[in-house]
Length: 139
Image 1: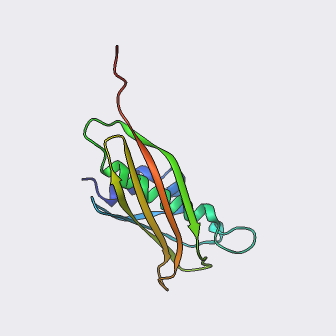
Image 2 (image 1 turned 180 degrees about the vertical axis):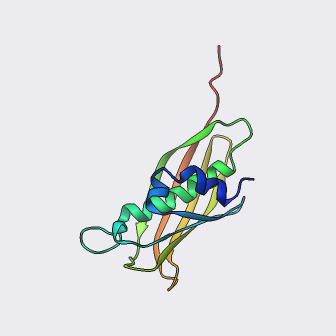
């Protein structure tokens, strides 16, 4: 299984890298990642932008899906996501722990909890469904 360095490298010049997402753990059971909060992560109202939180959770779940793709799969695409935002943060670090809820051949469902690292306060609950992509079969 590819480790955190692989996922940090492939995300470096993409949205996760631009937001400063750092993957710290990848396994069959969980993916952990975090963002050190900066002004650029905030909404104009001075609170953490929901898109920052969703991107952290979605990236963590997506990395988990990639790490656990069936052998013949080409990749995946997210077909549904939902988030419940329960709190916010203005400083420190937010961290995400993503875990698989369903690991099927055609779909995976991942859950994630985003929390404030320093206080442990839950920021958001997140769930997404990914469709597994396979090579097209010629007829």
